Structures are given as structure tokens and as C-alpha cells.
Image 1: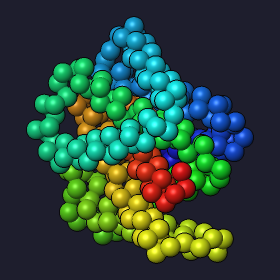
Image 2: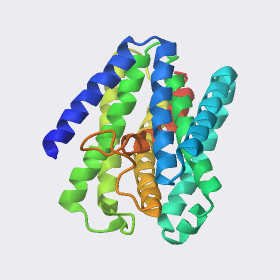
Image 3: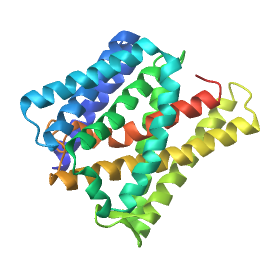
Length: 273
């Protein structure tokens, strides 16, 4: 299983790196849209929709993504705020599980939640591609999310005592979350130091960036827990089987879709977007 996971991770790394570095803006948006649509397909599958219903759901998701591209940044930035508010509310659903599971019973609401999870993620990643140094911006984002997850895992294994959401993900602890947030801030601080060698950074900009790293780590955890809660509601172990050793696309997208809108807002606050 470990060998399979490592092989899949290596293949994913090559694919994502190639898409970021070599695809033109339109090609990159098509790549992200394809990944998001695969996630939407898995979301519908977990809700046991028919093939026709899943096709209609994909069409709706694609139409919303197309409308966002036509609207441009004037539409994207307000959507990022809506997404951040959604993830704050999602955290309350996680804390109130299983009572909050009643919220999922109407399938239309569960489908709407899928759109709120996925579509802003597409908008955020597409917006990052408009930056002059988009490669560094996207690489930094993925690195911070991965670091938050890794630091949380190792800190939780070494020091974890208090369960964060035992009915959703028994292995996640508050100590692990704090470790992930700390690691993300340390890594972000190192990045700021390196950036300061190239350009002058104000104290306010540094504080905003570090606060963004702290919050980004927290949002990545919420995204992970939210998807785990949804899978428990749907009574499935993984969102799919497309990625050997890793499950489905959503199992790899959960933290990214939660943290990407916040990352865009932080960059906008720093005047980089």
C-alpha cells in the first residue's frame, strides 16, 4: 500500500508541476476545470445519483465555472469572501457532528454544498494563474498546505492527546492541528525572509502573511474534516478509486479547495493580486 501511495504521489507531482509550469493560462484553467469536474462526479457518486443526474450536475458545475471566467476578478473576489464564510460555518458543522448530519438529508442541499466547495476552488486557482510569478505563488500554496498536513500528522502522532473530532476522524488531535499551524507559520516565515532579500516588506505585510499562513493551515484541516464528515454521511470510505492508494480526487482536493480562496484573499491584501 505504501509503495502504491508513493508511486501515485510521484505521478501526481509530475502532472501538477507540468501543468503549472508549462500550460498556458487557458490550458491551465482547462486542467483545473477537469480536476474539479472529476471531483463533482465523485460528489454525485457518493450521493448515489444516477449517471444522468451526475451528468446534469457536471453540466451545472461547468456552467458556473464558465460564468465565473466571464465575470473576471470583479466576481471572483466577492466569491472568495463567500467561500471563507462558508468554511467558517462548515467548521461549526464538524464540531456539531453527528447532529449536524441532519443538514445533509435533503439531497439538493448536499449537491449545493458540493458546488460551494468546488467552484470557488476553481476560481481561486484560476486567479492565481493570472499573477506574473504564478509558478511561485501556486508552488508556495501547495507547499504550505502539504506542510500543514505533514506537521499535523507527525505532531499528532508524537504529542496527540485530545481528539479534535473523534466521531469523524479519530486520529486527528488538537495538538496535531496546532503543530500543523506552527509548521505552516515557520515555513511561511522562512519564505518571507527569502522574499525580503528581493524586495522591502513592511511590518504590516509580514504580519498579514504570517496570519494568513496560520489561518490557511486551519482551513486546510477544516476542509479535510468536512469531506470526512460527508463521506461518513454517505457511508463510504473513499470518495472514489481513481488514485491508487489515495482514494479519489476529492480525497486529495479537500484541503486545497478549503484553503485556496483564503490564499487568494491574503495575496490580494498584500497587493500581489
